[in-house]
Image (cartoon, rainbow, N blue to C red; front, side, top):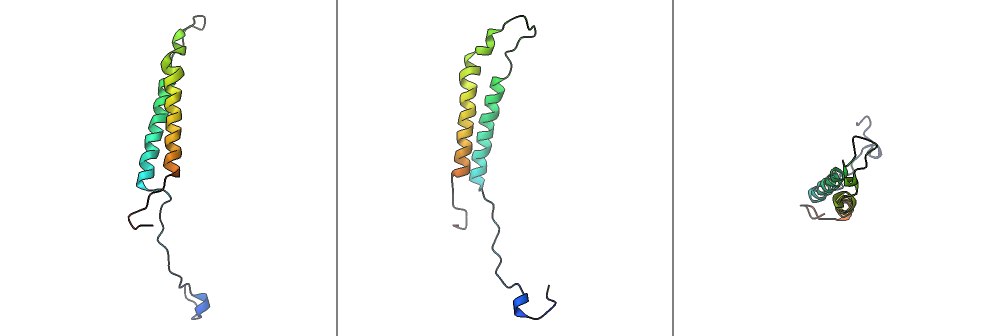
Length: 93
């Protein structure tokens, strides 16, 4: 707003174009990482028994003990990569 014609009250500084912190490349890898983490947690589900007096050894299956936690850790690694990687945008900045 120009109430006065004094140069020190006018904002003549050039405006910089606002950009996002992450690019499309980063978001793609973030969603891939979220998919790995979600798949790991889905593979960990189940294995319980309806009757608390009966033991179900399925809770110690290879899928729940080895595969699912590995997928969660891989997903977290992908998230770290997605956050830390840097690619130049279309304008070269």
